[in-house]
Structure formats: C-alpha cells, structure tokens
Image (cartoon, rainbow, N blue to C red; front, side, top):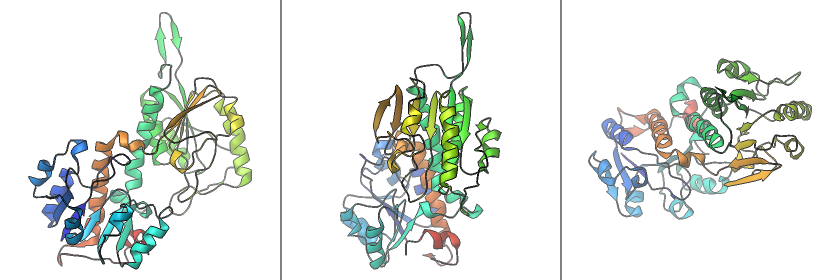
Length: 362
C-alpha cells in the first residue's frame, strides 16, 4: 500500500505532511512512501534524507497519481492536481470544507475518500491526531513572540538604580488552545496577563497558568458539545464590550484568538475601543485570515490606528515550519494508523468509528 505527498505551494504553505522521522515510521508499519522531488528541501530535508530511508522520490506528478493509494497534504491540492486524483484514492489534509465545498463535492462524486482533519471530534481517543490543537499551540506561542518583538518597551518588570520599569500588561482574547499557550508564553516572559472567553470552563484553565480571567457579569457558558465556542447573544456581546472597553485602556499587548468554526471571525475590538487604547499598544490578531477580531485587521499588514499597531498573517506557522511540520506529520500518522487494518493490509473505512465518520467528507 502506497502513501504519497506532493510539495505544497511554498509561497503559501511551508509545512509538509511527511517528515523523514515519520516516513521511517510508515515504512516500518508496512507502507511504501512516494514523495515529489525537492519535497522538503526548503526545511533542510534533502531528497537523499528520504531516499536513504526507502522513500521513492518522483520527478513526475502523474507517477504518484497512478500508484498512490493515500495522498497526504496540508491543504487541498490545486484544481489541476485535484482533477488527477483517481477513483477510490484517499486524500487526507486540512481541506477547509466550509470554503471548498464545491471542490470537495466534486471529489466525492468521483468516489474519492477525502478526510478533513479539522473536523476531528474532541474525544480522548483523537487527541494524538488533533491537528488543530498541535498547530494552535505553536500559533499562540509565535503570536506572543511576534507582538513582543514589535512592542517598543520591556516586557518584564525591571528594577534598576535609575528607576523601575513596570511589567507589560497582556490581554488574551479567546482562551482556547492558542490562547492558553499565549498566556503561558507571556507569563514566562514576565508579563501580567488577563484573558477573556465566552466559555466559563476556561476560567480555571486561565487561572492555573497565572492569568486573571475577566468575567462578564451574568455570563453564559457559550460552549458547544464539541468544546468549541459558539456565538454569543447580543446582551452578552454588549456586556463583554463594556468590560473590554475599560480593560483595554490599561493594556499594552492584545493577542486575539477568537474563532467560530466555519464562520467569519467575530469583531470584538471595535473602532470606538481603539480610541481609548494607549499609543504604542500592539495587537496580534490570529483570526486575521477569517476577517479578524478587530475592526481594522488586514492580513499580512501592520495597520496603525490611533497609535495602535494591529498585526495579522495569512499563516503564522510559516514562521515555524519545521516544528509545525513535525507535529502535523505525527498527527496524520496517528490518523492513518486508525484507518489501517494491519492484519489485512488494507484501509478500513469503518463509519461506526466516530473519528472516521466525522472527518470523512460525504
């Protein structure tokens, strides 16, 4: 059985789905592995590193499409490559079914089994496959590093003979995986950290990391059964807005992470709030690609409004591609093991398995 992967468009995506470490694991399990030429060169993984493990390096895409049983990617393949996927082949990646519905419908019509890993259920058995958590962890960390690099004051409190520099105050909006990692990173670097989230279950997690949780009076617990945030009522939004407006007056750095799966990101920091913020404040908006959590977020630009810098990128993980690829490849490997019946040496698409049933595009 052959597992394959194509080079991504490196201008858009620098991560890869198969690292040498994971290629070795696939081969030990009994798979053959095929990769396109120069697959991991940009990350320092040369073709020779793969071929020495037994991986076949292919010059032509057609050879991979003709022989592969399973294709592993980061995102959905280009339209041209999608048209070459054959009947009954399996495609696994972060396929963004909300944005790519028509393309995925066409694959389903061709009897291609497409699995989108961002649809994994939040159950214990799926934790080792949870690409959203592994990648969000890195994103939360890097957002803090990037915002601190653009902040023109010291982060920790410093006591000197010339006087004391106060610690920077950081607000994390959204205390999911990325937000919690942002809190932990900011605390380690000496900041005073506040956080807010629509899910009351986050309060204990925030406080365990040393952050102060900002509670909206009469707060609802806006959490879905799957553990994601859901949209708040208008009354809740108004109370949250009032609390944020007051809090933002004393904040130096804001990390925005609030997302609702499949929808435009909620605008949490409004225009009027920005007018009361301190000049020199930095906002890093991890929700930029889905519209952003601020009124002024622009993807891949640093916008200055009222003396406040607002940052957001298409793919912050392109700045940590080796670490991100390592975690992603391990997540995908664990997903494939769950699909694979080793005794029969075949893929078993068992729709009674919640992991398989939830991720399969139908």
